[in-house]
Image (cartoon, rainbow, N blue to C red; front, side, top):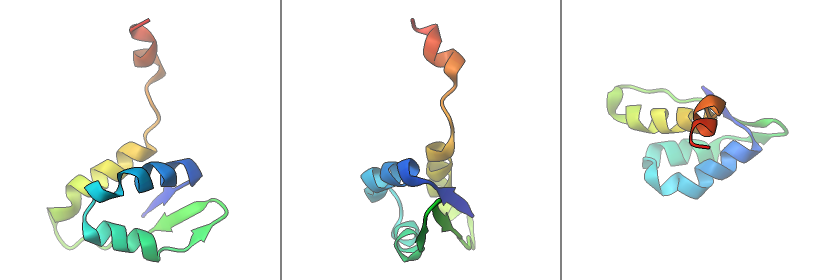
Length: 71
């Protein structure tokens, strides 16, 4: 399960063509609540691993220290 809030949903929707049809369909069928979409996946093998990593990257907060190193 992954929960995407409003801003995270916008990130996914902007990049949705880079996800498998399965992930897009599950996303589309998942009901949106006030706090986001609670998306449940049932992986049967590792073919969706890349998609799941992409979704987790949407959730990941940027490392503030690394952002400031280039300044």
